Amino acid sequence: MTRAQLFDQIQRKSSFLCVGLDTDITKIPEHLLRRKDPIFEFNKQIIDATADIAVAYKPNIAFYEALGAKGWESLRKTIEYIPKEIFTIADAKRGDIGNTANLYAKAFLEQMDFDSITVAPYMGADSVEPFLRQDKWVILLGLTSNSGSGDFQQLELRSGEKLYEKVLKKSQEWASTDQMMYVVGATQAQALEGIRKIVPDHFLLVPGVGAQGGSLEEVSRFGMNAQCGLLVNATRSIIYASSGKDFAQMARAEAIMLQDEMKEYLEQYLPQ
Image (cartoon, rainbow, N blue to C red; front, top):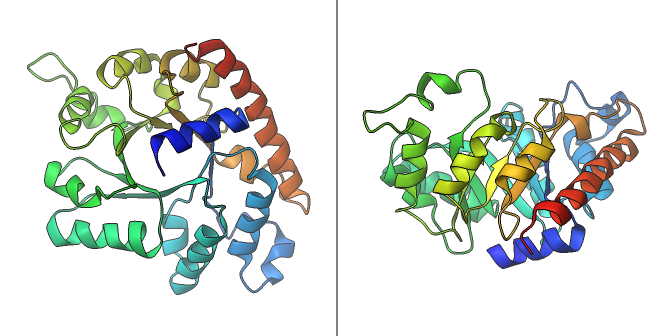
């Protein structure tokens, strides 16, 4: 998917919502457990309820890997079911070198045909380059919102810049704004203003809105650029909005609430 196609979808849907499909077999409604593939059935109904609102879906690969072969099959069916015009993210956080990285890229970007994959930058350029494919995206971990992000990402270097700022600057040498995005946690919204000075034109994947308490207004105010430049992810607040038979309807209601707010911020903060 191209940058223009992604922005077109954002404009048509008045939304920059990414729905996380971190589907936990222990949390899905009990009535689905009688189905042959309860994980896929849950995902299918979530997708049906939100596909006209979401511009991206992001399965966290760990939730499928943990189930072995059945989990991989559920993931495969899920990706095939998502409408082709909707951006897909393999939240795999891979990061290895040489043939290993190349095989990870083949698995997710070729065999499963995801549009993008999340990648850790710690091992440097040769651990990222194998994921750079035509019409595919690398989503590099930039500044995450977990409590341990300060251990390394926010360390101050002798140059006076923080380590995550160095990652943002250096990685722009590896790929264009049509190939690379960055993960920036929603709870780091105050840092977005500085991040936008370093990567003004890149798309940012922003998890942490919803159950994690990140501010959508702050993310939009500090992070939006001329093509929106944001994919804001919400997972638990949407897919687990209800544990009953109305789970899909409640997921849709939560997604619509976010869409309404996003529409307001697109009108307010998108440069005219």
